[in-house]
Amino acid sequence: MRKILIIAAALIAAAPALAQTDKAEPQASIPFVNHGGVRDFDVVDNDTLYIEDQHRHWYRAELMGYCPDLGFARAIGFETRGPDTLDRFSTLIVRGQRCPVKSLVESGPPPKKAKKHS
Image (cartoon, rainbow, N blue to C red):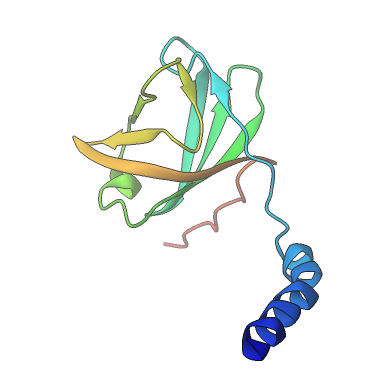
């Protein structure tokens, strides 16, 4: 019984520290994603992209994992499963492959890409 009390006291003492380290960014959503809500997108790598909405606001989307053809995509689709709103519960369709979204947060524009020297 004493061990349980000691463990409970340790967990209670650690709770404020755990709460302070969890500084998750607020999740965003883009309405009317399949009806003109998205203006543009810019791929960073195979699991991150920036999406611009019709009001020229940018969002950074992190995917659940590697999306193999994302870097080569000229177009992407959105599966929203309910309202026509892109959010962290949505899925990107890239060349027929489903790539689930892990997080969607408001952002500045995508970083500038380095120029290639020939």
